[in-house]
Length: 253
Image 1 (spheres, one colour):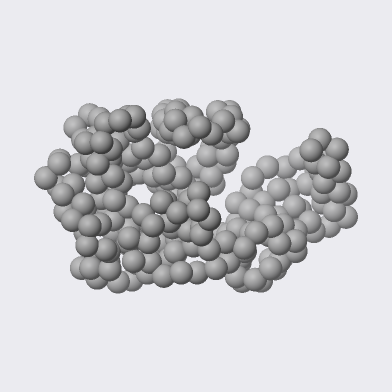
Image 2: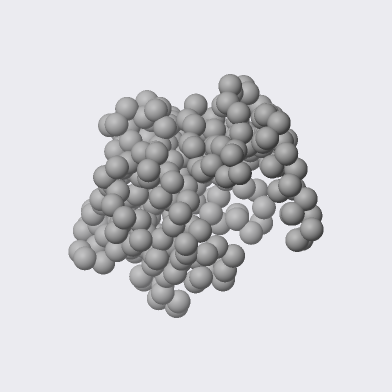
């Protein structure tokens, strides 16, 4: 279980708790992420894929689908290299570079609801808690793909993935796909060396609009797992603040 203290507002602590198997002994407004059972108010039931990092490298690669294995091998011939930054190794400049890259990627997909400062603040919180990782794949000096992760004692959870997008350039997009697969495999091996045992793919939805992303993740041969995102307000002050938040939400919808 991992606890992240996000902020304090109106005298109430806002926290995230990852992978809890039961209600934790904390007060405040708590967002349970990846809970094994419903705790408080259920927000959503989440399907994800899990890769067991206790397997050796040969087994991890062999579980990938044929084309996935080919692209991982091809990355070597394409001179794809990878870099990692974890916890306090991540500088403010690295955060800004990633957020700018991710926002450009986000906009290329037609999504506009995230703002730069809000997103940057969220990542800064995880970095300050020492539970964030940023990895990237490059060809020479050209940055192709970014991955980010929430990092716990024994798990890593894929948080974001962003890549360069060039409309109509199929050869380049093929290269980016190769780099993306290679980076995922190298990430798994890197975190395995750190002693992590579980690689969570960060969701694998069944809706039609995410079908392509889910098929990409499934090509690595992970195991299906369902868990819950929930919310709980513990303590009189937390319950009061949560009530106000709910009311504002209703009034502003």
